[in-house]
Length: 147
Length: 324
Image (cartoon, rainbow over all chains, first blue to last red; front, side, top):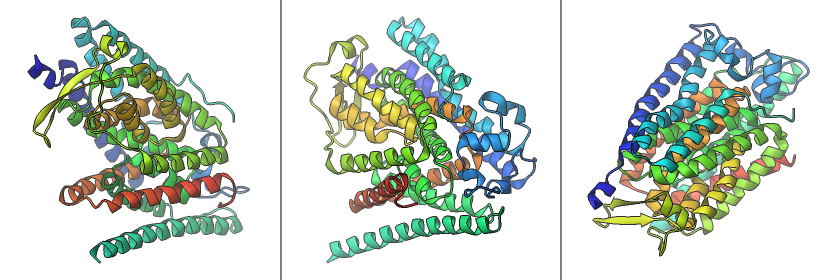
């Protein structure tokens, strides 16, 4: 019994396995898409050199603006609107970023059947609630106000 | 004599790093002034900044490992204070830096049973929900308010680092009802003692309540939250230090993920800042681990504290409009 408790549980190992594979894929995607971005192999929606420029009438460069100001300046879609720009060098990077952000959801979905099989009801509920929270965050429904 | 030489060396390194940051800051403001005069173009080519970002985050990665802190807590105040990027993008990048580090460390910690899924899952639910709220508040606040609060928080973290005592094996006489019903307990092999350590936790409701605050702060400032997770798990809930550190690291992969989505959906993520930072800090961390295996000068902790003190003061003064 003690030997069993010393080892990581089945769901813990399953979670680690998915996390490991997803993390490497996500990081590799991030680096490859960034090389595509800075090499100019794909045209960018917001030209890379533009970000450090200071627009007329402003005293900060574009990347010194608040997020909502930059979005307005370049008519950048918010929420999942970036998916329509994924053919552009800059927004291609968001694929890797979204993968890293969404990896935990996948890990939870993988351990859910194990928890159900073990009849671990409290953790089934916790895992389902966590998936709901992460999906809500990812959905883009939530908006930060005050602009 | 040897001791004073060491201190002198560290002082020189700290001062050099501070000079680098102040120079970057001065360069950024000069560039902006020059650009204002020429109406539209910045005098520095665009690639200078991601390159500088890579170099600085590489150094931060080394220091974070040697100083025993997360990369995010160094990243946000230092990059926010001394680079020309808006604090919105710096926080978005800070969360992704902390997230990438947690994702990379997570599998190994889970497999070795140092990070406990049973301990992490209830805590993560609370902290990640709170982090979403924190991220929304953070993006709604004005930058000067964010900088002021960030500076105050960093100075608070410095106070925690200086004063908080950690307990390798806290005494948990009786686990509380909630942790018992959730079976939050375990055994791990403590190699330094050559024996198995059984652990359990207490004060779970209080701990979960504290993670509401920790989650909000993590989302609001993009700092990661290891600085708060570890004391909460170790000192309040009574988990052994190793379990607390490992579970805290793993927790960030869930807590920060929820906040990252808010920043991503609000357009507060710039790949130009994110990718060089993640690569820089991860490579720096790898070098840091190699140095750590050979030696761990205690003074490095004080060096990190000095840097945080400097960056926290900078953020506070920037927020108050005293040091623009």
